[in-house]
Amino acid sequence: MDRTQATYSEPQITLQQVSVSFPIYHGGSRSLKKHLLFRGTGGQIATDANDRIVIEALKNVSFQARAGDRIALIGSNGAGKTTLLRAMAGIYEPISGEVISYGRVSPMFDIGLGIDGELSGYDNIRLRGMLLGLSASEIESYMPNIVEFTELGEYLDIPVRTYSSGMMTRLTFAVATCFAPEILLMDEWIMAGDASFLAKAQRRVESFVERASILVLASHSLDICRQWCTKAIWMDHGEVRMEAKLEAVLQAYSESTLTRR
Image (cartoon, rainbow, N blue to C red; front, side, top):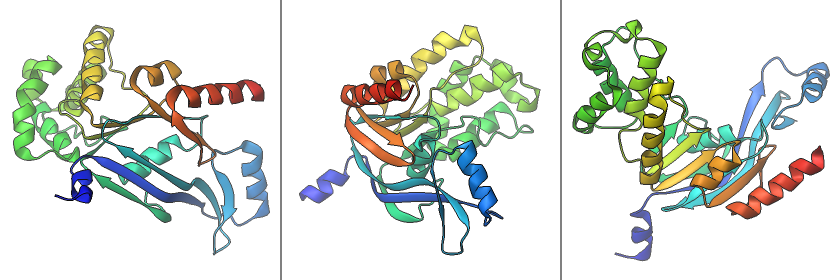
């Protein structure tokens, strides 16, 4: 086996000059552009070939994450952190550049995605598992663990539209964290419903993150970044302002934040 094949045997994700823009429809007037400038926006305001106003949410972003990497995405609101995660997950299509991934990408943005209120808890476990990229056999192998963790018992046999918000959180959380992820993309932190469930959920999250081959975590909490990450990327107006070891980036970001006050 040559070195190229060996490299690709482990999970990795590479971004090459990735740009993502969102057109503002009916936004060809100068008045709208002034309005957007006044309100402020995370990305850069530009115009496309059709003279439409667009928000450049990401601009020429390049970096690579390999097995073992724990990367924090930091930056102010609107800096492009969530857009970057969604581009990595394939949710947003770049207008230019390329996202190349090897390994299963597990985006943890909305753990309740794909829930059908008319189906039972068991059926929703299977549905949500499929949306997470699990095979039918994998879902069934994880089923006993999921059922035990939810503590929902016979409620799993009835439609989830009858569940309380806390019960729904237990179900979706258990499914979302039942497997060992390869490339784990997380936006902020997973918080699980009721207080009695929180300690148990926190332990589950810790185990889930530790089993990931690659972690890319967007968070405003520097303490959480320090807990889980060793590297950091500082996003600013859709561009990578700095990429380095965690503490070096956090220090530069903190100093910049103090300067702006």
